Length: 336
Image 1 (cartoon, rainbow, N blue to C red):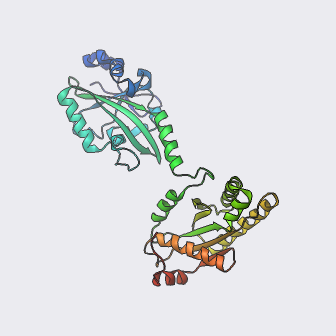
Image 2: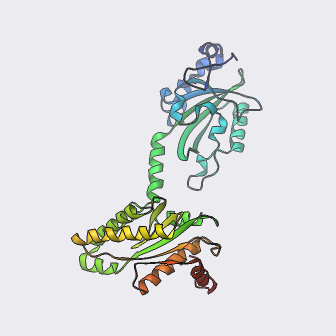
Image 3: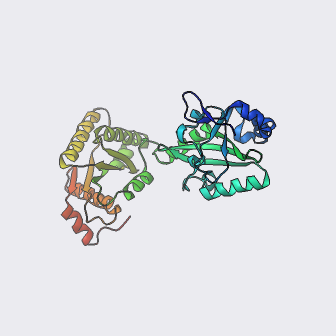
C-alpha cells in the first residue's frame, strides 16, 4: 500500500486515489454496491464515511485510512479513529446488540476474513459524556490485506433514543428529574462526599386539590418546582420524588448555604400567594457523615427530619450528625 498522506486540516491518514484505482477489489466493490445491499445501514453512499485499515496484530489500534466522507460528522476525535474507538461496554439501558465488545469484533473480523462476507453492527458508545449511535459495515479485501470500513452516525436514531431516555428520567409536569433519577444519584454518593440531602413536602396539599381542583394542584406543584430551581444553591440538584414531595442534593453544604436556600424559597412563596392558594412546606436536611453506612440512610434521615419539622411547626429542620446517628442506632431507619 502506498505511503499515506494527510489531508489539510485533518489528522486522519488519507489513502491516495491512485492506490484505490490500483486495488482491483476496490474498483467494483464500490461503496454504492455495498450500500445497495445494506440500505438500512448506509442509505446513500454520500451518507457514509469510508476507510481502510491494515490487517495485522495491531488491528484495534491501527488508524483508519480515509477514502471518502467527512469524519467530523462522526463526532469522534479524528486523530485517534480506529476500531478501538467503537468498543463499548455493555449498557443496561440499551439492548446488547448496540454494544460492541473487543471479543465480538475480533470474532466478526475473523469470520469476514474466512467467509468473504461483509459484517455489520449497530453500535452505541459514549463520546465526551454523550451517547452516539453508529452503523458500521466491514468488508475484507484479501488481495490488499485490509478491511474496508464504512461508518455512518445515526443521528435521527440518536435524537429519538436520547429524547426517550431523557423523558424516562424526568417528571412530565415539572420537568424536574424524577424519583428514579433521585435514587440513582443518592446510591452513587460516596462515603467521603461532601453533600447534604434535603427532603421537602408541601403542607395540606390535599386541601388545595379538594378546594381548588386537581388542575390547580398541578399548577401549584409546577410553581413550587420553579421556586425550588430558582432558590437552590448553584451546586445542587432538584428532584420531584413523587406527589408533593421533592428532594434536593446539595454539594459542599454549609449551614449558611442551607439557610439561604430556605430563605429564598420563603421569599418566593410570599410572592405567589397573591394570585393563588397559599402554599407552605416542611423540609428536613442531613449532611453526609461516617454514620451513614448506606447512602439511602441520608434520604431516610432527611425524610424523618422533615416530619419532625411538621410536628414542631417549623419550616425546616437540619439534623446534626449526632441526631442522625441516634436515629440509626435506635433501628428507626429502615432502608427504602
